[in-house]
Length: 500
Image 1 (tube, rainbow, N blue to C red):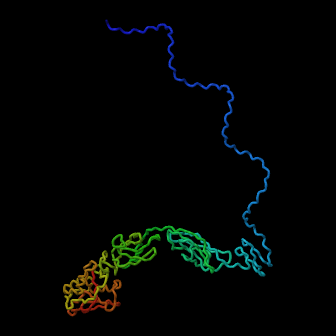
Image 2: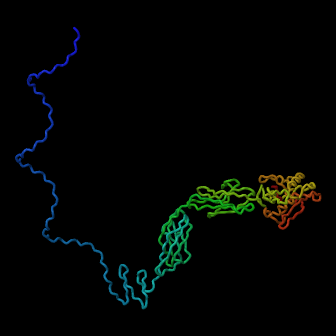
Image 3: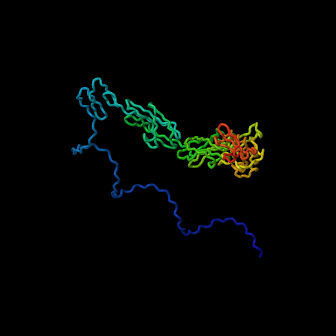
């Protein structure tokens, strides 16, 4: 048998068959949606009467009905409080011819009759026979003006409407407490004008003050209205200014400075000038202090060295520290008596002097102070070589060396001068006669006293056997010098010198 062939096409539908028997009733389906409400039917018959319902709330009050008939009279009430007094009635008639009545604000007051031709005055609203008696003046305190940290202009005025008691004094009083009196700070106006203003300069900054003008009369003191004002604050750190150095003369100069006003809450402990030969001097250097309360201060300082530059600053020390001013400088010039190179300038070479140099000054320096003791010249029995010394200017150093070489006396004046070391210099010598004369002529600028017995040794020696045991000395007399050969055993002064 071969394989089954493909299914052929579906044939045409045949005719409908006969109706079959009725099937069994199916299960009840789900309820459908509710349809719309039908029309209202006709009213039914009236039912039986229901029970009475609960009482509803009370309705609103109806309109007031007409007034009822008058009732019987009630009992009498209690007595009420006393009412205020009514106005005073007319005064009673006077009892005396010429008597006057006046109202004092609360009652009528009678004034007795006056005398013939007597004048009736109205004194502060009160009728008074004769002139009004004196009264206290009216004092007004002015508004405070020109208020600064430590000053303000206070004032007032005095007025009256009649005679017043004699005014003994007038002015202003002020305090940091209210209602100041004469027991507080006061300033009296010295003229007799009734209007016054006073510049008060003793106030504290950042403070509230109360002011009243016053007038003191023979009957007492009258005060004006109280006025209040506030002073502005001052800085707590001073601003310090160093002024240019002035009056530079010799070894002295005027140093000065100033500072601004600072708050009274800060205490100034010190103020002054400091200086040094190095920049930015402080209070650990040379200082000149001032105790003045003034804002400016100045003083002359001494012992400045010639041809030395000095740096100067003013300062103010407060409880919060030290404030310095700007730095200024000055350089003292060379002059006779100036401190310079270990001593004082005793002589400056002039154009006619040997060794003069217009570009570089030269001269003679003497120790700033006298030697502590008078001494004998020394080398009492020594005959110095002839021509070993000279009296000329510029020979003192060689003279001293020659004398020491010829005499080994370590107590001699030449030896002490040649071996002196002072203020960092060791090239000192005993001056020659002419060098000592230069010192004599400039003795005032050098501060060397004059008078009898004020003699100085020189390094000039005669070298003559006739003068053995004698050396040159010059007496610094006030008129002319005393120059002589004197025994070396005498006790005289000596002033070592050096050249510059």
